[in-house]
Amino acid sequence: MLRGLWNLTWLEIKIFLREPLGAIGTIVIPVLAFVFLGRATASASGRVPSTSPLNSLLSSGGVPTLVSILITISAVLSLVTIISIYREGGILKRLRATPLRPWTILTAHVLVKLSLTALTMIAMVLAGKRYFAVGPDVPLFSFTIAVLISTLSILSIGFIIASIVPTARFAQPIGAIIFYPMIALSGLFFPIAQFPPALRAVANVLPLSHAASLMQGIWIGEPWSAHVGDVGALAIAFVVCVAISSRVFRWE
Amino acid sequence: MSLNPIAQSHDLGFLSFAQAETLSPHEATTRNPVIQVAGIRKSYGKNVAVDEVSFEVTDGEIFGLIGPNGAGKTTTMECVEGIRTPDRGSISVLGLDPFRDVYELQERIGVQLQQAQLQKRVKVWEAMHLWASLYRKKTAMGDELLEQLGLAEKRDAWFMTLSGGQKQRLFIAMALINEPEVVFLDELTTGLDPQARRAIWELVRGIRERGKTVFLTTHLMEEAERLCDRVAIIERGKVIDIDTPQRLIDRHCPERSVTLATDDPLAQEHLARIPRANGVERHESRFTIRGTGDGFVTDVIQCLSENRIKVTAFRTDLPNLEDVFLKLTGHSIRD
Image (cartoon, rainbow over all chains, first blue to last red; front, side, top):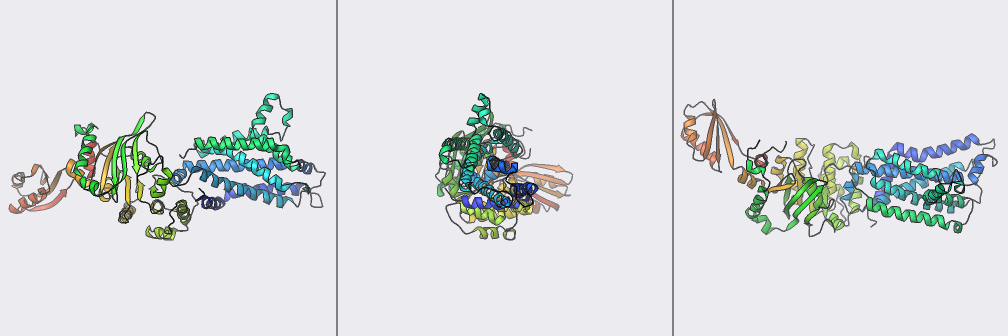
């Protein structure tokens, strides 16, 4: 049932770009912040010296991973907000009284968010190339795939929130309460191996830890075969979350 | 407030419903039923919103569900549209089950919802274009519809900039985009000024002219009377009676009244002798004569002319659906 999907997706992109604050917040500000950071730490040669801690953070894959996760989560939070605004305003209900399926609506919004996330990341890579010496050995293509897999998995958690939050006012805080602790436990800040056992068990079931491990590993050149477990965990999370959200989806 | 003690009992509804079926055979026998609703019930928690509601809508008619806010009109309509599932009872629309065949049904009906919204920054033509793309049946009549509904110059305007009437007309246009066989209109003129309301009534009549069936809800009795071929009066989740507006009036409120002003000293005596008059009330030089039957007003005029009574004012008051509602429920629809 692709009928209407492309039209809806394209329309939602246009509508999103018409809302000046949303477009600036998701695309312009992250890119500007990145460029500003580069300029501030650049040496006379106009590049960030490879000995700078910034560059070593970059080459370890921690920073690109964290940035990707943050961008993804901001996309998920905005997805959750939009769906709840649509629900509150009766737009979802109006869409329901058509042959549209709920998942077509969600898919359209996911495509919108994915393309905006991709756009933001490409803009950051292009803008950052001047300042940061990303080694030629960084597998950008594989990393992109890893980001995509992680994004879909994180988005699916967003589906559940989007399916049930009653009003837009609650959407953002509920999303934040769920995602930010997940980032803290993702292993990006402290290695999961050093967690106390109970916390380690929690971290291992959270999809974000697997997303972080996958992206970071791919960035530093580890083969996909080393991350089959991560991809599997993310896929399971995706399937489970989509199944739950399609059961609990509320139109109004 | 108990003007009519019988009407307080809702059981009357079933009696008069059965009666209505036998009294209005011509639509039922010459036209096919498009919507059949039998004994549906829907409750939210302990609150029963719709209780044992049954009715039929036949091909090509404008059928109105009328009643005060909260009577169960929208819930009933949304069950028929497949948006809600009744707890009990059965519904058939165009031979389809709105619950099982909801997507098939959506292809063939057009829906305008009460209090619906669109994305603030969607343009009028974009909404029409999107809606057209959602249906199997491909029609290229988006611009034509905008033209007919007087929205042509608003084609490029954002939804949020439209007035209430323009939004309502856009929703009607969207409800018609797939050339539906049945059109559902829920409280479509609520919040509109009288002029916009009249324009919308014309549009709805136009929909019927195209051979479509229209099922609407309204709490405006004037709207129901002017627009609907048949109406079902619904109150507290129950259907009280169903028929054409005129027959409902004739059945429940056959009495009409003439009010006139005259200084003729013998007027009261003459007026009291009118055969079909049920009573004459006098307030100084004003007389109000009540009577039943079509010939009653003629009788009054005849009496005035035969007795050469000079009148300075003359007014006929015919009962309307508002009076029927008051009679049947014991309260005004605005209470």
